[in-house]
Length: 116
Image (cartoon, rainbow, N blue to C red; front, side):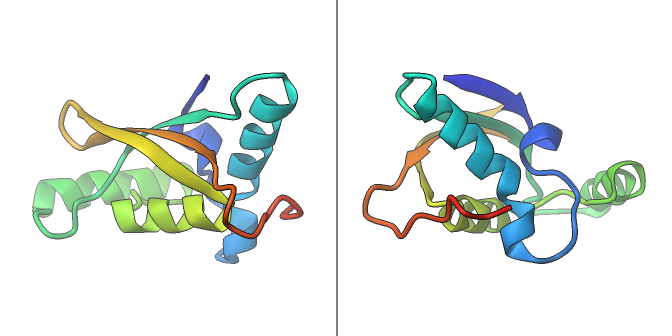
C-alpha cells in the first residue's frame, strides 16, 4: 500500500472534476502496475459541514490561502474517489478531523484511467 499526504493526492487545481482526481488515478495505477494490490491510502483532514464552527472555518480559510484549496468535505473526497474509478475499502478517524481511507479499483465502475 502507498501512503500519501492529502496535498499529494488531492491538489488544488481548476474546478473540472477530471483534473482534480488525476493524481489519485495515477497513484492507483502505479500501485497496480508495481505488482501490488492496487491499494492507495489517503490521509486527509476533512471539513465536517454539519458540525463546523468558526475555528474549523478558520482552518479551512488558512488552507485556501496557503494551498489554493480549502478543506474538502468527506462527500467531496468520496466524489473524487468515485470519479477516479476507485472505492473506499475501509475508513478510520485518526485524531480530530483526519480520516484515513484505504482505496482500491472499483471493478464494476467504468474506468476513468484516461483522466489527465
